Length: 335
Length: 275
Image 1 (cartoon, rainbow over the protein chains, first blue to last red):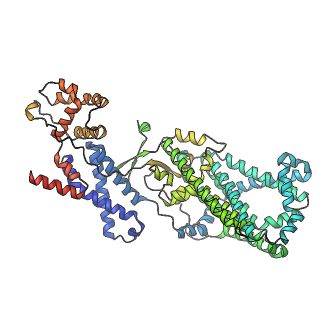
Image 2 (tube, rainbow over the protein chains, first blue to last red; image 1 turned 90 degrees about the vertical axis):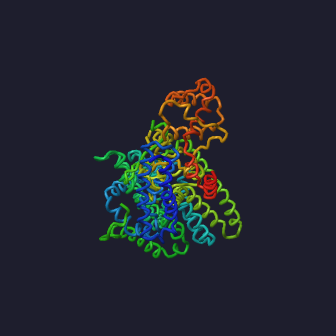
């Protein structure tokens, strides 16, 4: 068989395969494919693979080879592609997969939690012992601004000012999402530097938060501060710790790669980490809405009991969700 | 060799070897720059829209909030969403013919897109870690960023080629006569394929550089075929000789069978019928 007769003989199959490929490619047509067509597709695919090997071994020209290579690549793509992300799969992941995955990697969460709490507590204690330590940790301007934000005057004004309703909320949601999700993603992504980046961001944010909290307590604004942060802290702080845990997973996979080498362990553990991080991102979205609409609400500030009950509910919801959701069910994650 | 031509080979479960061309750092940077430009454009448009909404009484904060929210979506979501939904392409990548695929040769899923783009926070050139991501990419065998390594993806140059027609030699050219050749050697499919590629690339004009290359081919070929004429004219215009060889041994049927256009195929059948 020479090149010419080969092309003449095989060309109809290639054309058929090409048109089947476009049917497989479009979503609408794919759902109406019959069984015959699918088996025809796989038969043609194997035939084209064989043709490609033939052309390559006989060196029948680069054009022909590239054409067949392209056909095989597209066929390979259609047959072995990962399933498209469906909204239902996403929902299932959030309801069962994410908490399951969280519990499987609990020890990273505890380490991340310690890193996120301990430095802050120490910094806070230092500030509590001697207020002047503050100036070593944070710039005065920032602290003054914080103090102003939670002082009685501002707080009182905010509660009576009807203009600071939903419009204010919308503007703040945007800001909180931007800020917190950004922090979490950085916490997660810098885990790639053997976990050092994650540890740095966790400790850094911990110290900043601990210092501010302690300073506000010392200055006597603690009531306003805790009234404000109690509710959304449930989702926000937990999510940041989870993102930190995800970063630690990546770092650990590099420090202790196991028997299959760095790349393999990075890929395997990285997939777990990214699922945790995206779950944390969703939690931060929820936190941002609470932070913008619930926490500063003038109405709730008049009925503090209601506000605290709500905040406690949020905390309980987070704890119950993470410890019990998806328990006793099959794997909801994609691992 | 492989590093230079940026080829990567993947073996499918059918034992077929697939070749992919990796995208170089330059092309990828260009695609990225294009994406940045598009994002800036989004920003400008967004600012206009939100500016107009912000003028309405009571919507000042709302528009500011929506602006920051949309900023976030564009900042973090742009690449994730496009690559997740467009099977591994952003507008910039599409414009430059690039695509992100899995190392196994198939298209990426949503989590893959998320992984490789969220890790941009680590290998983004704007960070303190400036350069690390770039160095990693240059030193990796498959031109992978850190994000690519974790997600197990590669960025390839993609081209969909139809089956091209073979080169058609000029009509007025005189084919070689069998009396002119003394040996029984005739160029096979490999040599003809080589000539086909050669003429497709250079044309039939015979510019100086082409002549230089053609000379390397023409003299051994003439000797092997036992060409009885003088070698002098071949040395002067080796391209013409190669064209004659090509015209003599290329199969005229091939042109017809490869015509993609059905109408032109019909016409050529008619022509053959008449001849």
